[in-house]
Amino acid sequence: MKLMIAIVNKNDAGKVSDVLREQGYRFTKIATSGGFLSTGNSTLFLGVEDEQVESVLSIIRENSQKRTEMVSSPLFIEAGNMAMTAPIPVEVGGAIIFVTDVERFEKV
Image 1: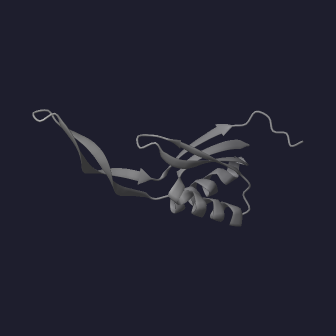
Image 2: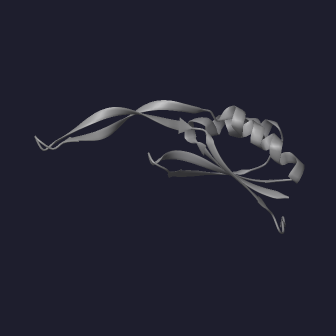
Image 3: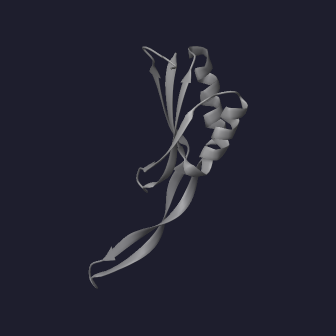
């Protein structure tokens, strides 16, 4: 048995969750935040059999795509001691997935 922990961008989490549910996977979803932009994510915890890992990975890959968004970033001009914002492209989306062995599982 494996424990899968998937950190998914909030914009993709609904679709990923829907497809996992449709395919019969059970999971716990927690709202989280972090990373470079401190944006919202959902962290999914799934307990799956070893042979189900690739199927779950495929579902997450197909439904959590990376994309580029423009984000305002501070731009400092030292000569005038001014601060302005400038848009910069940042890659967002996708997922971070951890897969670990489960030593013991109990449902009480």
